[in-house]
Image (cartoon, rainbow, N blue to C red; front, side, top):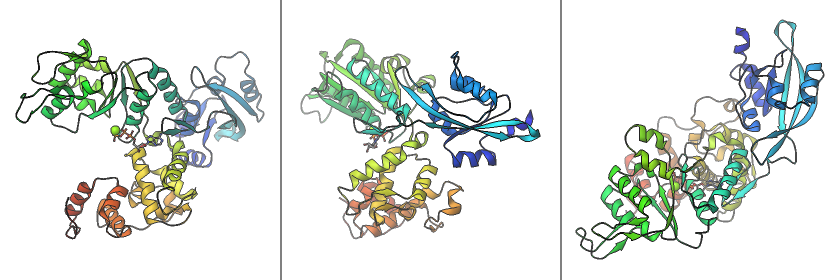
Length: 444
Ligand SMILES: Nc1ncnc2c1ncn2[C@@H]1O[C@H](COP(=O)(O)OP(=O)(O)OP(=O)(O)O)[C@@H](O)[C@H]1O
Ligand SMILES: [Mg+2]
């Protein structure tokens, strides 16, 4: 029994299989799953547990199970089976099997799975977001449905995953689309300023309040208010916001009379609001008001199948603004992109591509066009056959990258900042921090 458990995706055969095929499973003589590659999870839309019965996983409880029967008969097979991945969508999955001699002379199976042509791996564009991943497509379907209903939506996702795009989509597809869309980042302002920005103030409410000023809650009347980084809202403002939601009125700072407002709130956070509630930083009653419909945006590292499509679409867009034109992706470069973890998600992918436009040449995106930090996530199989630019490791990656981009842009800090995905001020601060010359340009 022990041996069986050793045969998982981390062992050498597991790695080889994962590398050579996308989605594959190794079955033992009882047709139980002994090895499963991550591609299978993506294709089937759920985690296949080791030890599960393969016929059951693939055919469910259906009484007609030709695939199960064929496997049981010991003959190699090729079949296309329907897999429901949501209430509305069924994906056709092609399954091929090959007999596999196993230890102790017993007979197992290698099952190769792929999406059958005509299935749903077609790229889909939804409100500025590209995907071919079923999870994202499912999210788009949910978005279409809930946009029309006037429900409150909470989007959770890491930085750069598209939370703001989702918020806009909810607004643009809703009956409020002709009304205002206002966005405010709760993490960007200190408490008292945020209060005045959100709720507004009347003349004389505090020093500097020269006239009555409506806040975002009022300005979003008949439209949508996007509360970005809502978990950072201070507790006192949480109480005030709850009151607005409950009474549908706003009282500006320094005012007495409540003003009626009609708005839909879409909020976003990179944190778990539930955890914030548990730790006493967020009011439970407000959380329940905000997360009527919780949506989760998967990080890019969990939807790497989208990488070629995203690169293609972002390059098509960048081809119109950069002198360089990129029409294809070298397989080795794609391998590097797929190895990387993408902490900054799609925004970071955009920055990486912008870097390639700035430093490289030619119609194919090459490994040598990629920034050094893509090679700094520990040893990877690709490093055996891909030769990345060898960075000078005595300096932090960021400093080297800043230097490189500055060189390529001929010292143009505005373009360099754009490529690096930071503001000019941040770039200036980072340059100062690393002791890079900042003298010959103004600090405006
Ligand atoms: N599916 C997608 N296809 C193409 N571009 C995308 C997609 N998702 C996001 N983007 C792009 O990625 C960038 C980041 O998106 P967005 O600003 O919506 O992320 P965010 O989650 O709000 O990030 P942050 O938490 O840092 O504010 C934008 O340039 C956006 O256009
Ligand atoms: Mg955002």
